[in-house]
Image 1 (tube, rainbow, N blue to C red):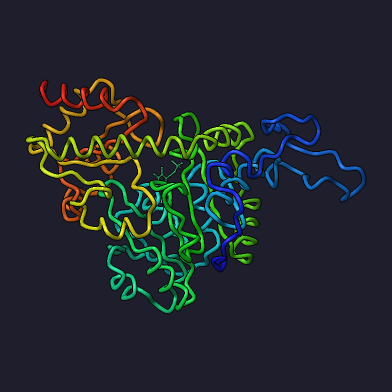
Image 2: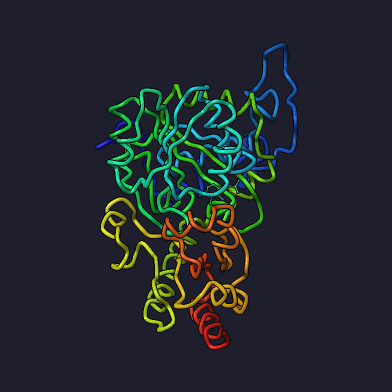
Length: 390
Ligand SMILES: *Cc1c(COP(=O)(O)O)cnc(C)c1O
């Protein structure tokens, strides 16, 4: 049965990842979408063109990427951006001074910074709640609330929010709902199918998948929202170049394969860590010990490649650990084929005051890993030597 607001799909995810938006090039037959490295397009007469006038407005390589991502998310329309933050900013451009936004309290740091240090000065107001508890979202709604913004799973505590619950709450109140789906990817979670209005990505992470480009995307099936977002994309201009679009298109072709292996490796590493004497707690939505494992199972078809764990030790011990691994690279970001490790308290989440971090459950000995697609035995051997050497 077709789901309202969802585009009807005939082919499976893996097939659409390779073909949707990317028919062979009509001019040459090139099987791979060309990089249309052009700023403008020649018109046959005034206003008589082939659908392209200027590359800030539209570019064929970008169109291919936008259609492909929309298809994978089950949405009618897609838009892509020069960064995830540029995509977030464009969603905010649809709001007006005086509007109120409710967001998850465990938000990506850059999103929190943009809301607080940029958009607050434009007259928008924000409330941050633990969105895992729908009652807290409901209680925060004001007559001026226009947008509910959630991340699930969150970073780095991998908390889960009930997507259908948020969607129906927002629908009832006429509030736009948005899910940042960067961590789960459309392979494991499709919020549009659960009634969400806007889905957002940092394609820098899993969609690109190779740690070689920065980009963002938005999808929606709502015509009015799409028109406004598309208008803002062109008016504000945070668009990606054609080569970056091409890199992401190439990354997406193997998204399904990569996500399967990310998840398989993450599961194995999470279980190994769970049985380790020097680990206090492992956080992975696929583990039965995860407090919202049942909800994750209900709304996701897999649990992704990010694992967080607390060492049984001090902040100093955790820092020594992330500096002792050899195969895992010490770096921010996530979602690439190579495994990364980081200390959220001192790196990605350092801008949150220490007290606030602890009150949110982000302990000083917490370590986050983005489990890559190397052989899992090599990954475990590396973690094992790090335990032995520090
Ligand atoms: C990285 C990230 C962003 C920001 O994207 P950029 O591509 O770095 O601008 C937004 N949300 C989440 C969840 C992210 O991980």
